[in-house]
Length: 467
Ligand code: F0G
Image 1 (tube, rainbow, N blue to C red):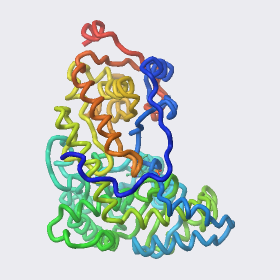
Image 2 (image 1 turned 60 degrees about the horizontal axis):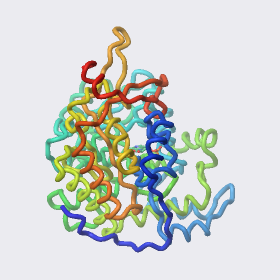
Image 3 (image 1 turned 120 degrees about the vertical axis):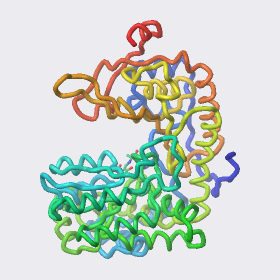
Image 4 (image 1 turned 135 degrees about the vertical axis):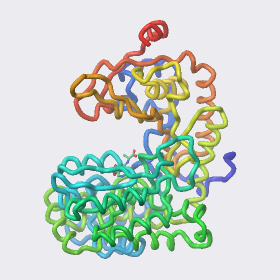
């Protein structure tokens, strides 16, 4: 698919970006120990590290900032925010938070106790961590198709309902404090979930008396996929589909840094008033008073306006078609990617693309380094650096199944021309891929090592000897 659908906005303010010269890129890479998290954003030309908090706000959102009411309690922006969330999602009770993981922290610290299990299609890292830190187990039950990069399926984020039923039948009710579903399924490649699957999951939860919560970060993108792909949904509007999704749930966690089109913000919403009242006490301890929850009044206004804008069909059509066209173009270069392309990112299969670099030498990280070296582009490794670990007994390396590089597309930030530039750089990398070098980790922190690890490049000859 070509980049044929034009941006449904025009540019009113510009932020200059700079492409450092090759010498500077080389210096930056070395100074950062070949870890792109350590490269200052100012030295990045096209930044595809994440789609979270990186959106461009609209003129209406910027205007809304000037209407910020910074009263400690009962700011007018809170009421607008509350009204907007109630209207779009239909949940009667909610608290604002400064980002998604705080909603997770509040929900799981209230409901999860040691030995409990929380199922999901795929838990995002922070969701998993917030369950585990409370002694719970985060169980991934995505359908089999969702685990294979090359398998095409319209709703690869669906949960395996057979496995859910089995889990519910075999586990005492009190050990499953809630069930979760992530829209779209970020950890599985930004793949959507069908309305039918959400309904099936919701019905199982009702049958077994288990509260059902949605991780709603990319809810509008998921609704767009339902409209485009699910039989019988094509004529329904995005707000109608969103209503149908959330009326099946008991609540949701939300990071407004994604489909809130804001740089910061989020919320936890529910139909359970007692739960929200309990959570408000904890919220006051860690975030702030329940009418601002860690945000300035102006931020609440930006989120409220962003949540309405994200439902615009022209916006969503551009958004999804831009990511799809980006992925198709990369695939057209003969570079292996996760198929089909998800909503917010393209994931390159680095293990397949760089077969000469063994997993122990971090092929996905080698590609991340090559992207910066070639074009001052920043992507993120989702492979052995992020998920690899040592066997506690033997000390042997345990590698994840996939070695991916995620190129996440920020919302309304880059034009199709920017993404075409990324494709051109990838084409050049493809032609010299045999020369790309693996890496050796020279420093690793005991937790979340990918943020701070240092590397050195392994010279090609030595690499062959080590294999
Ligand atoms: N759930 C999902 C599915 C996410 O993708 C994220 C964040 C969160 C929860 C946590 O939200 O960052 O506001 O606390 N994902 C970002 C990413 C960080 O790059 O994919 P947060």
